[in-house]
Image (cartoon, rainbow, N blue to C red):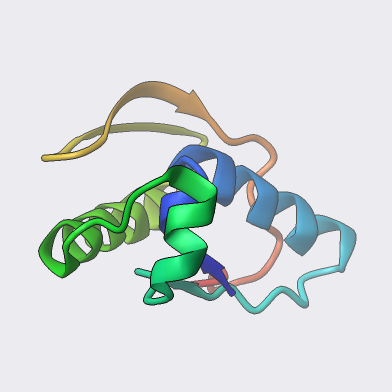
Length: 98
């Protein structure tokens, strides 16, 4: 389980893919918007509003799903924009870990 805000979604998806591969498909992928104000403030110096955190979470889930099923991902959202993000090899779990 991870708060999406502390890592770029592309890095989070690549990390999850690696764990899925080395664990032979046993990854259980969990991601959330975060809630602990003190943790946010100590990590990034602020505590974003719930609306911002939930928009980012939704975009992170879309990016991760795409990266778990396609070798190249492009995404344009309100918060994140990525082009030609490579995730190869893909996770071995089927269906993917989301």
